[in-house]
Amino acid sequence: MDDKIDLIFDQLCSKSTLKQSVSRSTHRVFQKIENKALEISNYLSSRILPIDEHVKVEFKSQSEFEFQVKFSGDLLAFIRHSNVVTLPEDHVVMKSPYIKANPQNGYFGHIMVYNFMADTIKYHRLNDPGYLLARILVNNDNHFYIEGVRQLDFKYPDISQNVITDELLKEFIESAMLTAIDNDLVSPTYQDIQMISYNFKLANQMVSQGEKIGFQMMGKSPV
Image 1: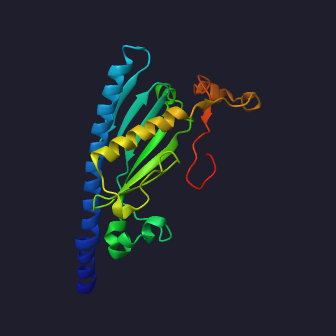
Image 2: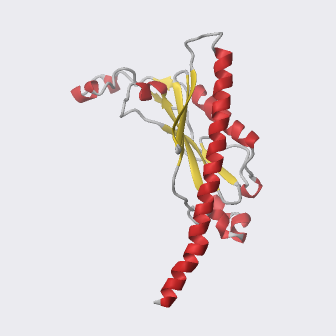
Image 3: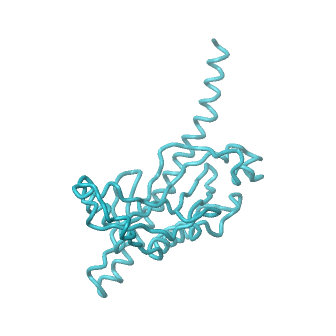
């Protein structure tokens, strides 16, 4: 029994302590992203307001795990996952000499960026899709790796060189916003909406319809 207790204690001292440290690191990065997103939102709002008061740029904190940035017809939801993860052994990141030299660097917190239509949230259209634009993986060493659509899977392929900075986080947010704006909503075909259920109508799904089709994941077909 003592051997098992010692083993549990060793795991608590190593892996569990590491995961707690990664979680705190990710939380700090998320707070920096949130502060930067608020700064960008306020700046854009002050510039667009004199030109068109109907074009809104709004920031909203939902919880310690989520905030939203709404701009015109788009909304970005930045979500910090509460768990620490690792990646499959065949993932390109796990093959990095940086991680092979220190496997502890292969544990990550992750922050995801989803793009919704602003009206999806406004009208509570539960069946509307949201699109994962990117996720940023953060380790205990303050290094990161970005996975996402082609517009966001940019510039930083080598995790050993990728260190979190304020300038990087600003670029990450701005790129996410540009990606959302550049991909317009495409109407469904006439045949696709020729027949609907009454429940669909009651759920307020007819207020607006359409999907974004321009997003392409690296190495994958359009979603």
